[in-house]
Length: 397
Image (tube, rainbow, N blue to C red; front, top):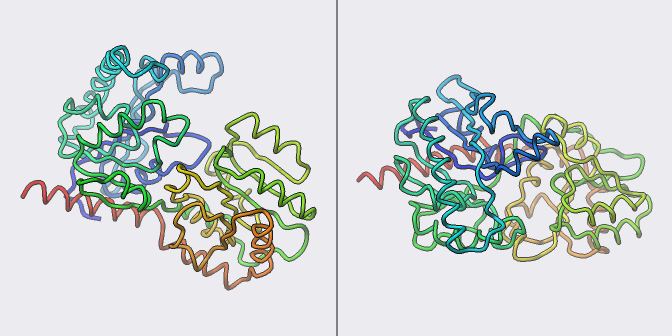
């Protein structure tokens, strides 16, 4: 990775901490090994502050400035990583598009810009490169208010297909794409959808090898009921009908779901099934112990407008742990055609899971881990850094 880049200012969508793996956080951690990075985390609202005080689930002391909003997470070698928690803003997602939304968004932007400028001055970061990570909700209203070398949009999901972003996301994303210098996506279908006439690159999701290699077992389990594992948020992407039908036809199998459940209806269906075990949301360092219990890693996604743009983060995580992987063909998974099994309905998915379990071996586990090593986040960060450097050179010539 070259050292000629200005500091990176990442306007993130997710909070830095959390009980699920986040591609933006992983990429920024990898970039910060060789570069200066300031990550601006999720903009909490006054509603979030009140909930945080009542339930203790939000970092309300940082949000309110009772404890420092700017944190240093690393500063060694050539790189550094700082995380900025913003002051609380007005909740506006429930408003209709129009004058009231615009007025409140601009008021929020003033608060956010002042906080970012203060952090940049304190860190002595001049003319950073901005990476806006799936956050056109801020990007549109911050445009032109920060002294930047360049500004790129990092898109890793179809914003109009997600429940939590579809109210204002498509409108603001279209507007924001006309304001930026280029676009980075996590999959080729997303790049084709978002790029237009902009410079663009696909930076696919990687894997944190230091976490998932801890779950590696060199020999497959040969006795007992097979444990079919799923790692990630448990939401409407999962084909629950297919999964439960498969379990009903395979009494000996167990389904281990490692992640947070996003909807109560999903929880009710799963907890009622005797072959299902659910851990709930876990911190990254808690994951290896659970992944090690799995015999087969599953990606049982439905096929729709949301999932067809996904490059799944979990696929390389399973492979790094040596697990055979069975997935539906929800998206373009041609990169993994040699190392995964694909099936799309309960009977064929069950057959694929049985085959994956039976064919697993010491040799295949080593091969899967080797495959995952070529997709670690350090390699992804180098691709990203090199592309940005090329873009800056072209811009200055």
